[in-house]
Image (cartoon, rainbow, N blue to C red; front, side, top):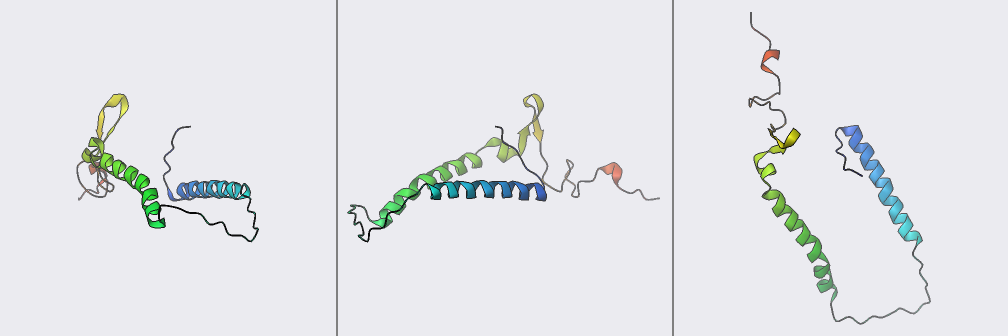
Length: 117
């Protein structure tokens, strides 16, 4: 399945609702799969690693992945030059939101400006 880009408020809210239902369904499925037996005796486990060390070890992987992703995005030439590939691999210059290609704000074309008489 291909990735889809969603634009607009209602589309984003709909996509968020679908994702929320999907995540809730997965959590409910996981909860239904768990069985807990309470017999009154608490199990005591011996560990050579303290809770803080375990937490730091568990955070190391996700933080490393986030750092690598941030470095890739920072040094990606398409992001740095604000260009994107168009048809047949041609480079197309993107203008910031609210600006047209001439650098004017408002995004109006020159021929759409009212003319003075």
